[in-house]
Length: 457
Image (tube, rainbow, N blue to C red; front, side, top):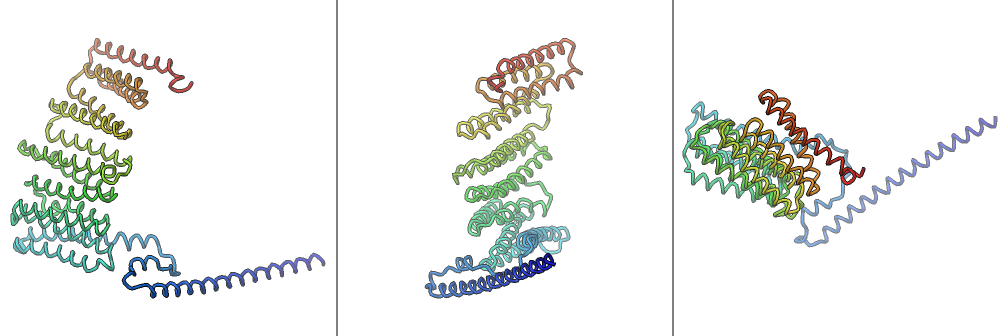
């Protein structure tokens, strides 16, 4: 009986305690709402007392107290505020360019009217962006990007396909568009303008016509846009813009040199190949040179990729055939150029970039040996190179250099077993295996002798 009474009393106490807690929560919630209303009134009164000339609407909007509302979906936010307008303007510009191409194919309108309508579409997008800029800055930026891309491809088409504009006139117009787009991107402070208005303009000529009869005009057009991209990347940390411009420019250039076989076009290839390399080298270095920021690992990779694409482009511009001795000369020259860059970066205290470029230079030198000589000469020269690199690694206490030397020895052994054994004479096999075997044993003895200094064993 006593136990039952105790349990009932305990249950009643818990129920009373629960009701008291609920009452406290309601009271606190009411107090918070009342204090929030009071804060809003004080905030409104404070703003009304300030002089009208000193009130910045942007600042007021930023300082507004949060309003209670249901949390919105992050996916819907991403799609509604960030993706739809980007996709929409890209689709619109593609539609305009394809519309121009359709009009060309079907002869629906005169050539002059095509250009006028294309310019009108670009100007319409621009005026819409200007009218919406104050209230809808992000949406206005996207419209502006589409306008600039439209004006770019219209100017390009008016010169190359219809010959309404001279090269000089189109050159001046595209420079003006690049300058204007760059200035507006800085004013808007929006990376989308650079991506769609500048970078997006690269692909427009290929939507209009597959004609490849004016490579000098196409790559001049791309080089002008690249100048704007480099300038923007020097002012703003817009890494994606620089990388996209570098990838698209080199892809278009290498694609062109792969398919063209006219020796007379070699001059154009040489000029724009060097122009692209310099532009994107400056772009990769812009953070350190202009914004005084640390040289990032991504910038290092960009430098390396720029060098590699430069080399590949040069192979097709000058080589035309992988059995030609000019391939070996190109590899040697680029190896020396990469080595010079490596020394410069090491002197600049950028060790990662310096080491990567040094390994890249070594790889090109190995390719030079492979292109220049044949047979056992290649095997012995690769082993000699490995010895030099290993000794340098020991002298300068560089683990990466020693590992690179060992990797080259391993690659030489693989080549000897898989390829050379099928073509070498018996004497050549004996010499190659003896030299490589002795070299591997000497390296092994080095590690055995200095294992305490190297590994603490």
